[in-house]
Length: 444
Image (cartoon, rainbow, N blue to C red; front, top):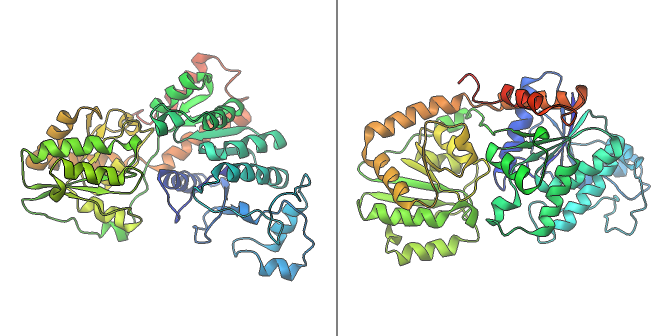
């Protein structure tokens, strides 16, 4: 099974959950399926990505013919590709793109991440996908998130191969209903052309069906998972704060993540106990507003804002916390609680979070119910029996949620697309049977 996969993030460069999910899906696929070959296309790889899959940097694929000799090409490409790759792609340039802004190798530059000209980069990414679709051998196309949907659609139009898109979030989640029409049109066009739509939760699947008018027969919930922690992270000691407790919010400090509800709940808890501190680990457009809100509530001395955490810092933060809270207003999945549970930290999540569909050993509250959130925080900080139960049982639960199992469910949908005629020629009863068969809660 050869998969041509388009993505916008991949470790070690992590901007959010998309990179973590992309890594987990591909690693699980390669480890769990001996015949799986994944080619992962990124705008601008850093060169330090793991080698279990083939990485293609879209910034190294020529779209304008340049007559360079072998040595020149060899000296001007990164170590993860060969001159033969360059020449092969150059031979499949399909149109005159000399009007485009290219470098001395005939390639387009990418800023990486999410620059101000993001829509231009999405378009350029799609143009380059046309070259790869003509030159690479693959059985199926898999496009992650709206940024790569145009590339996936282009590759499908060129190759005729089935397209699976992976909906990690929709603009309804990111904007709290104030949808950007340009983003919406890109999302809907990708969904319209997709043979299969994988959504990170049933919550997201229902949004796709309802707001994007997609046929339920081709929409499937494909929940995320976590990877076993490396020894380096397992060896991080848990911090004993004594009588003091630390409650942590870790993520982007943006409207979608509901940080203001966490502040409101923190204020209520501080009225009941002087031994509980609150950590806001992350960055975002509401960072300054949350600092000011904490000061206005008179709890600034109990709140800490360490900024964006990455890599090992994230797990040090989890292990230094007694309670983790994710009060998201709209969370398609939310991988952070699973990571916290891996570290033995009990979690409180909003009922508006997709991960709640596969988690039982957590406390669930409505994001807007600050009284219930405050009660849950206070209970976990003061009731050692409840804290120990959720810490121990949560760890057992999350250990069963693996990326290898996710990849096997994805493979089932791949096979339906490639060998069994897809989903649109099936009855609702047949697709419901497939949906039940790949349900992660089956047998639990």
